[in-house]
Image (tube, one colour):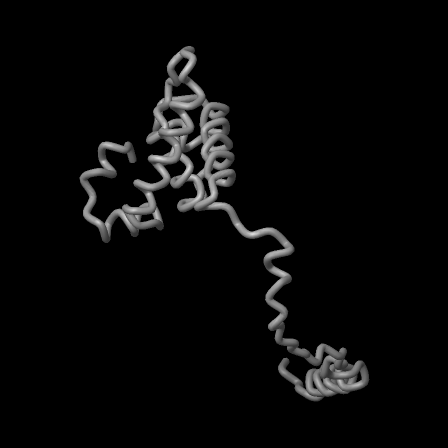
Length: 150
């Protein structure tokens, strides 16, 4: 789906397709636009893929678990361009304070840990022993011997 097609979706369809709300999408897009403008403020070649398309590519990749090859075919670009777009979007959003996850120290500060114990001792599998199998075979053979069919 192209960014133009995404704009035509209503909010519930947008959420179903991308997995995020439209406001989150707009916030991500402004962050990516700012990063793109910062990278190109001195000039340089324009990117073949807009930041909005890169965001759509990344959301498609994570939401639908599609291969980069299939996404590349939909957007008419190479597989390596899809990979670079995903890495670029990931890097920008991870480094931004709104989408950064807390570090290990912040996670360990809340010491309200609950301990759950699970009894995972080994229990032998209940199955017929070998002796029972031979008894069944003996009964079958004796039945076959006792019948005189011809």
